[in-house]
Length: 190
Image 1 (cartoon, one colour):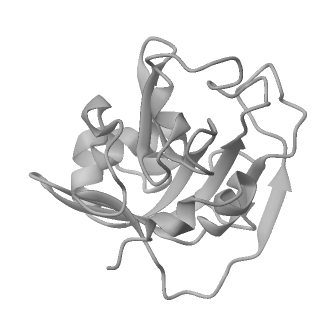
Image 2 (image 1 turned 30 degrees about the vertical axis):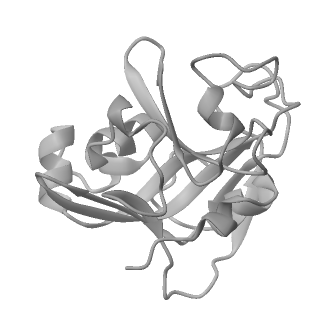
């Protein structure tokens, strides 16, 4: 599977968020390989009050300012990690949150990591997919164009995309920056 090039990420964040739908999230870990189709994303823009980079650069969010094509993994609610891909031009603090993935390969490893059997419970939500894929804080700032964690081109045709408001946030919740594959049963929430 061919990783997406850095040029894919160095574009408008909302466009990247939409075009990530249908691509493949791949993690080759020491435990084994996990692969899933990205089915839900959310865009976080620099002027957006829900974006971690909305106010200024900090040690936590500095990866969001580039270069694009890197992982932004952060700890939230004192218990979960979330996985984002850095987008836009270097110096612009933006990223796309990967909200849900349709599990395709490495299902037993995902089940072991999640402690769940039902396929739908493995990767339907940002914290779930991070756990199922074995993504940790050690992946923060890592390039997604090479290495064990990457996003690959899919051979499937472009999916039909549904656009709606983001979920699980208070500020900027009214912005239509959540995208998912229409009628996909692996999204986190309708």
